[in-house]
Amino acid sequence: MVDFLGWLNFALLLGLASLMPLKMLAADQRAIRQFFKTAGRVHPWIGCLLIASGLLHGFLALGGLRPHTGLVLVTVVTLNGAVAWL
Image (cartoon, rainbow, N blue to C red; front, side, top):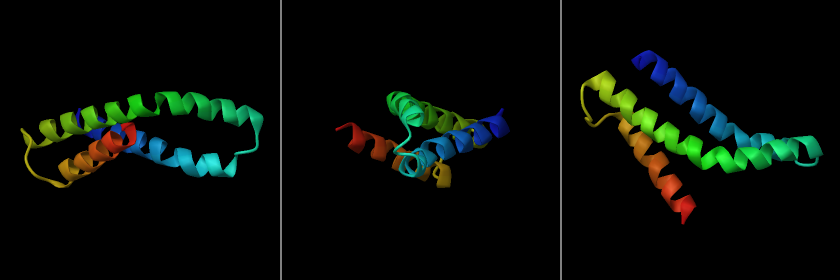
């Protein structure tokens, strides 16, 4: 389960981070604009899923929430999401 959550977190983070570069490359194509409209609506929810699965992954891997690099990453992603939501 821990390995699956680690790869899931990696895939979610890669997917969220790749939206902006892809959007810049394909800004003038109409069909792709619809995809980005939908992606923009689900982006915050996928970010919340990333935070929750990251915390669960760290909890299961270490047996509790202890300071480690994953917790720093989750904190940065959470703060980034909180600032963006304001």
